[in-house]
Image (cartoon, rainbow, N blue to C red; front, side, top):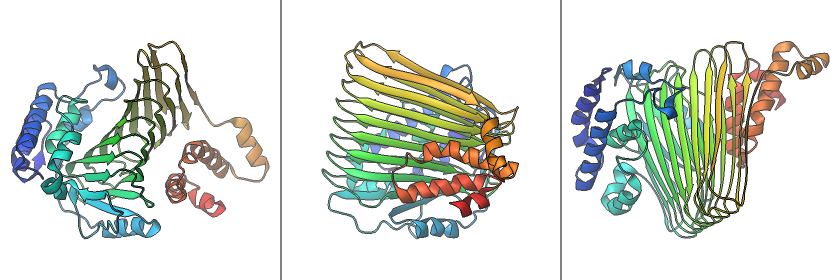
Length: 438
């Protein structure tokens, strides 16, 4: 398969793939996919003329060419991840479920963890309610809806609590492949789980991946979601996380973006009932001429809900980090407590940060705050560490790591937090020394 830079190539790709996509025999799904493709063909790629994309241009992605190529083995990479942490593992390679690398293990009654490609036979109607519609999101969302080849179906019955995380490993084996994933996570009343999405690829791979994750939390459900994006510096990554929360539910989202030539993360949650709580926590690191964009939306639609949002970015060389966060407080959403913050650390004169925190409030009895900072390594702190015998490079790395640690420490799970800590240290020149110190 080869994809050129014109939209017709994607229509041709749909024509070739549609018959082999999971659930191809489900009538309503075929209609959704066709309408989604029609929307993408009508609107095309988002451009900076659209307000939500003003700081992120997809023109290089639209002009790129992708093909399946010769796949490399990812078995050792996946095995290393599985050896480090326990859990329920679903592994997707180039957008397709890999049964040999997956290991779901024993589940409590009422829990279902399946690849979508296997779930259609017995769960088609439940999937339909969660799958999404062609009119939602950006035009890129529609392209995902049309071409998603697989993903996870995670459904937790009333009161079900998973002791170990659900790990969704999404690996790129072909160096220039384009593939699409769609994960659906449903937690009924009182259910609890941690879900980890880990995106990895071969060094130097220039693949394109679009991943959409849709979460639905019923009353008093608690879901912690960690997305760790570690693809190569030549890859393209577009991701969406969309959550809807029921009364008294808790949703924590940790977005850690450390790879890709261009990464865009759209993260949204909507409070559909009272007394919801959410934590949106993010950390991103970009160097060279790489670009990362986080675009968030918290919809306070009901009274007495709480949201805490904090994103930290580290930009080196001529990299560009973007944060746009919007908190929308609807009429009648009294008792809202919302805090939003973005902090950026620039490591060079050419590094760039754009931050736009937004509050849109239509209720009176609320407590809301937002802010953003952009700065460089503190000279006094650097001098202090050097006066204690550290060389300048190691002192800088310690300060950079300390800046990142404020985000990392919000991850409650010890194994997951340690995994992110290792990933951050590995990016720093003095990472080996920091690892020894840890």
